[in-house]
Amino acid sequence: MTPTETTVDFQLNWEPNGFQAPYFLARERGFYEAEGLEVRFVEGHGSPFAAEQAARGRADFALAGASAVLSVRSRGLEPLAVAAVTGKTPAAIYTLRDVFGEPLVDPAQLAGRTVAPSATKTRILTAQLLENVGIRNEVDLLEVDDHTHHRVQHKLLEGAVDAAVGVVTNGYELEREHDRPADELRIGDVLEIYGMTIVTDPAFAAERPETVRSFLAATARGWAAATNDPADAVDVLVERNATLERTRAVERRKFETAARDLQYTDRGRRTDWGIHDGDRWRTLGETLSETDLLEGEIEPDAAWTNEFLDADVVRNYADRVSG
Image (cartoon, rainbow, N blue to C red; front, side, top):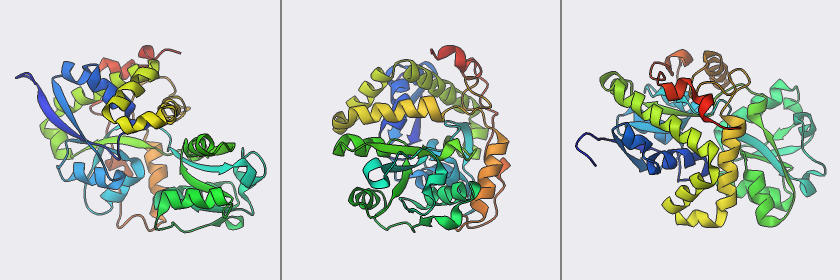
């Protein structure tokens, strides 16, 4: 580290995977260094943990889902979302075609079916999706199993449920591993709510605004570079975590799905990077307010800011992304 570099800790929401490839590529290509930053990645234990770490000042930045940001704020903490990384939630309903009996292409097909969610937040989003399409009372949406993700997948593989709820590419993973055609319905294509965000502590942002701006500018460059060269982005990721070599194709699919289908909304497609839309935050707040996920009152508009998204690489992001 040079004398002019500032070290910052970046709390990830989970173990390194394809969704996080842009951040590792940004470090590998020197984008953070060019902004005077040395970034230390910290593996995570879920979005709520990541958001709380940032809110308590235990990490300078964190990667966390928007619903987790609001959930943590309902407990009296104040994680502040300084960039909306994906304009759509990564949550998805997936199934195996030999279990479902037909290709799953429309939420209305879930009427009369049993669906198993892998987490509380994705269950809430699924319930809202079913409500929006008018079939909530016609679907047996199970409670969350204590053993979550893998138990849900086993239920689907065994035909004990008709579909499962997880994140995009879960169906693709099962298809590759078991050679059985799978289908996915992306919840973000129906519900206009945010997915992943970059958060920090409001006090940190107030005291070190240029550090926040620099971090976001370098991260935007990382996303552009990864979008233009996904193979290299995944190579860097695998170098960081060699256990991902076996699932290299899955990790690339995760990133490309996030970049192509989740990062942009219809309203702002191929424009600026990370810019928040208050309507999406308010819609998410309304969705969560009727659930047990929140422990107190929230103000969705207080959870985010566009103040630090003023670098040229952010404002002219579309020019950096080919295709």
